[in-house]
Length: 416
Image (tube, rainbow, N blue to C red; front, top):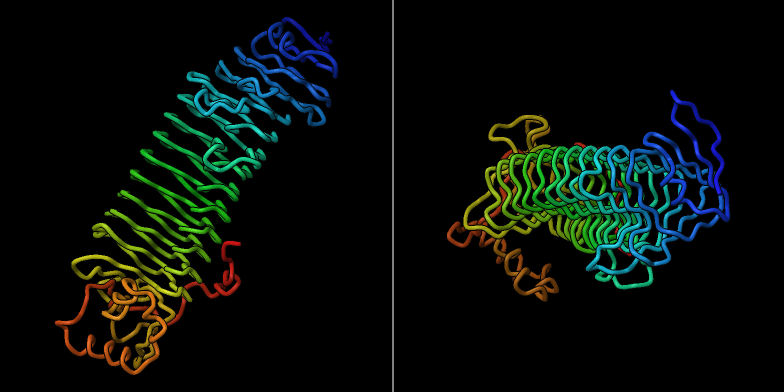
């Protein structure tokens, strides 16, 4: 059934499985630390790995679970799975069927360079620490509604995960992360799903250099704190690029947010820094609500958004630095002020909203009259008489020039 290619009392063995043979009996016979190599072919079976070993595909063999539950279930620490096409898990949301299910206690699992296709969940990882999920291609059930799909990678109650360089699409949420801490999410492509990332109740994590596009929402961080979200790109999502909801003590920096319905949706966020982000060509640049205050918002570029900020609050929200200085103020492409001393900082504050803006939110048809003398007179009236002024985001020292000089290639990246 299988050939024992090399073995010794002092070294791990390498087992070889050929087309027409079964893989599970070889896994059962192998000793901890052995390697099971599967030759190119089609294998119709589900596997359970209950000891530390390596399962390696040679020439990218296909393992089909035949829609009979999990295609591979990992039930041991220190398991490595690589080089396989893993497909056809069961379709029961109640049973949470997955292409690869890493069950509780299976610490330090490594899953890399695999194709996981037409599974309900691509990878389900539960109560397993220090897992590494690297450079996999994951696609879901493309022919069913989003609500009937599972997630691409689901992390629940883990620590120290590294999710690196994966390409995930046509699932419910590309990354679903809950109660998982001290993780790194880097270099992933997340697209054509409900959310690129759906992330809750997790702390001390790093999101870096990920691309989220053509989803309903790009990156959703909810009920979290101590996050580093930097140098990501999220564009062409039909709702928001980045959602920050009930978030504290985090740094959101260097991200490109382009061509979304709403660039940032910020709700109940405190003690957080937003720095050096490029927010360009969204219908609404930032939707700010629910007491999001005591934050530092400096050095960002808000360019060519149809509405720069939609703010709902009872008092002004101060963005930018308290004192003038390069890199402190934000750049606003619709700023109408001046810079008489040529220091690169506007001489009059930027105010994101006025009375006319508020009326347009309540009565969108008012946009048809935006250029009329009556509406312009109303705008001027609101500026001259503070009693008619509405609370706004105020940047007292706006930057005259954008911090990102290469912003123009991000125009017209809308959802299609």
